[in-house]
Amino acid sequence: MAVGGRICPHCKRYTAKEARCIYCNHFLGPEWLVGIQRVLAENGLLATNLLAGVCVLVFFGEVVVSMATVKPTPSVMSFVFFSGVDWRVMMRFGALGTGLDVSEPWRMLTACFLHYGLLHLGMNMMALFDFGRALEPKIKWPRFMVGFIVTGVFGFAVSTWWYGGVPYSSAGASGAVFGVQGLLLGQMLAAKDKAFMSFLWRTVAYSMIFYFAMRTNQAAHMGGLAAGIGLGYLYGLEKRPWHRERIFTVLAIALFAFSVGSLVYAQVHYEKDMRAVLERHALPDDD
Image (cartoon, rainbow, N blue to C red; front, top):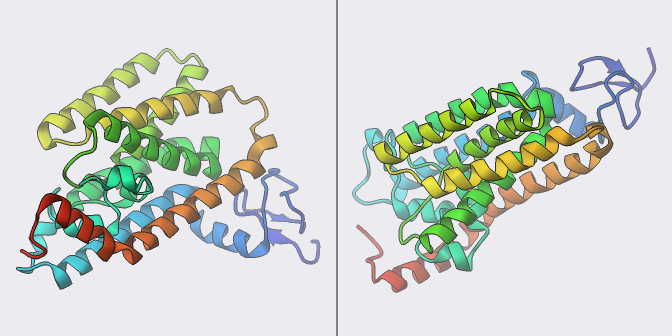
């Protein structure tokens, strides 16, 4: 056993203290990062765990802020359904809408991690883990992370263009989740899988059902799905994906850090943004 080696978080074998694992050839990065990867990747879903963790933490923050600031104080049961969190709290955490989707485009990123209620969060997280288990081990966590964030932002960009800037708050990970489904569809398309069309129409049908039943953001769903199919197709065409692994690892870490930073930024600039929203729509500053 080599002195100074470490456990690879990908294949779980003891490897030399090199930039890449000598067994699975995965890029390891600095030692502190390897430790974090090993803890988060116990189930093989590093990116899925990180993304879901941020969504859950942000929703907990939404509930705490709602209970402390919204008057009259909302009941616990109000947070269960899709419209439980007050729109002003959603705007504080980085939701789209009320004109800020154009003047503050970073909200297209933060909105991917916000949810209006426990049911909204739960449905998206179940879908994320379902598709994450099917896809992340295959394309590895950096490409999965990049795919989730890029397709989620693209979905909200399409939504802003389609609706011309919605006058109400809009948020949720569903556009990115449909993007993850698109990644899987793109892989199937690249492999010329005969089940591609069946899976595609089933995905579109689910989106339509949710739209008519719950008035979900259909433009964000379809935008994320289209972006996911395109990106997944490119992933599927890669002949030597490990050659770009370091690039995707750096990109994934940068995008995730920017996502967290944007969520913090939304809190810092909350009061300024809310004054602009209330003045634009002549809304009262309290219930």
